[in-house]
Image 1: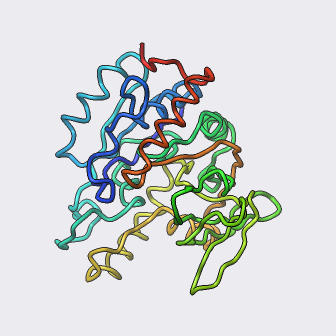
Image 2 (image 1 turned 135 degrees about the horizontal axis):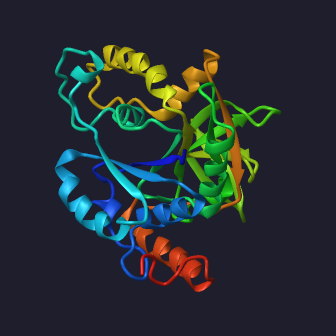
Image 3 (image 1 turned 90 degrees about the vertical axis):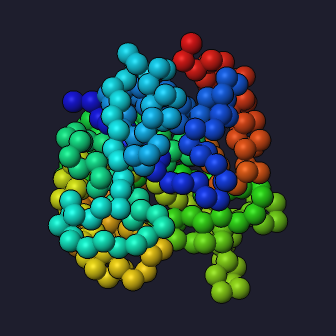
Length: 300
């Protein structure tokens, strides 16, 4: 059974100022999602599921259906505020949905095969999709999941500090924990440091970080559903609290329910957080096209 690619595209892109998920970055207006799907098809994925807000469904389908028809099966998952499907009989006022792990849970009735989760606005590189496809077809189990571990120096911006999930990895290549470092940046000719409470700590340039590229079986839906109910109960008066995938991973590891293999990649990651990032991403993609990694017109 071919694995499924689940794309987190329900965010409102508040920092970017527009729907960056459908903004054009390639030579013919290709979105970052286009490159992820192109790489996923090449790596052997059989279906792409988009997690979106239902009100964006029509414009979204108009963009992706024509180019993907006949290439890969497509499916749409809607993330909403309704808690009743999770057995929570409450209406909680929020400005945005409940976070990435809640988005994944929204797909629980539509995914029946091993799958991976990625962000819509991040460029991951073919190597990552190839390695994930291999893991999902040969190694994954209900107690053995994975994430792609990027080298920290291949994920930083020259334009200031970023947040990164820094992975602590054991001798078997499994994640022990992931620590969110909120101020990570380059210093003095390529050194990588993070700052906390005014103190700088240097990190090795090959430290592995999570860029939200995870591999699961459908068992994760049952495993995380009660966690979500508990999270809502504990955070119903905190409208900005979010139920994130690393939170689920952390609980699964600590309770011994599942391990997470950190699959290393040397791919360069790039993403769009701010408007200023757009020309940089366009140049990165242009360089990949010029060097023959991608065709000039992705879907011609």
